[in-house]
Figure 1 (cartoon, one colour):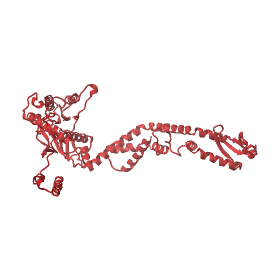
Figure 2 (cartoon, rainbow, N blue to C red):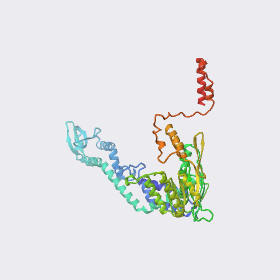
Figure 3 (cartoon, rainbow, N blue to C red):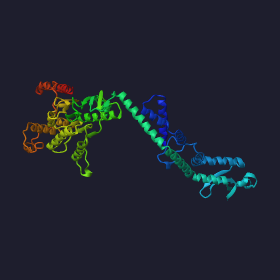
Figure 4 (cartoon, one colour):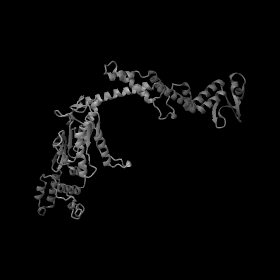
Length: 515
């Protein structure tokens, strides 16, 4: 009920903001649905509900003070019983003139009126209003009385908490019934607010993030210029890690072709292949929701289905390995994708033997090209597949560009024509923190494999388990860049130096090493 009240308040504020503004048809219809919300229910909720609401109705305290007279009385009795009793005591003193009159309480009599024995005659008089005092108990120097009013007050105090909660629960039931009776209007208003919310949010993003208005038509075009991943872009900005590198993507049919292109995307790990795949899928979704898109320009022929096979997951409870899940998802794509589909495939065939995986990926690309005939981006580390571009007319090789600098790899995150000849996996492993001995041994194995020096059984690689043999060298320290330090060290002759000269030379060398 509190959420409904807040929603009504927000809806009223939003309706005022739009005022007499001329809106497109859908937004105008949404505004009309908001204005049709029940004002009596909104006002009733505001009058009835407290500002701070408990989690559960059984806790009570959710009905606003002043809404229900009896409830206020019960709360006063429950929370301010001493004050109520003190008020009654003062009125009795004024009525009887007995200044020593007290209202007390014990577990036997409950609440009672006590006066000293010398006031006996006043309290037992049968004249006027004093006749209503009922004798309860006589003590050595005091007498105790009650009244019908005090007895009723005692009963009310004892039952005040239960009665107050009962009144609140009854009010809750009435408010609930009233809200349910307006369910259709409330649902319509909520949907209308959602339309306005999404429209305003996308408009704000489009303006603040320099998104463009896409062209969406019945063609098979898919031409994105300067496309960006909206989430990764903002994440980079917030972390201060630099700006996002925008990339183009063109899967449109060429010339007289009647089917979209397939991009075979190669490149290193960490190069940005997965980001590129996903950003184009997101751009397609945003465009077809009616949103502007994170790109310099975009022309998208309507995509009837979007298929993606990304990430690694398993379903072990049902007996399906990571590779089996990958194959099930790939099968769904190959069996269902039509020419208007957009398909993004990230690394098919990784979960099995190299040649098995390469064969499956190879056949899948051929099937996408010849049978599905859809627009697709296929990312892979199987560089052998780039040869397919000479066989399949609509298949194009593109790669994530990198540069090597002093033994390290620099990821440029740029997509360009061509094919990668390496995956730079060993460099990425080094960046991840693998021990230097493991990285060095991996380079050695890689060089032998690439040179074709190893037999099918890889006998030379496993001889004596060289990584863990006694002959393995200790991890070599990282080479220090040549900056004059070695030359300065070579000029020093310790045998000819005094202790002071040696200490000064040591500080000088330390200063050079720190630069």
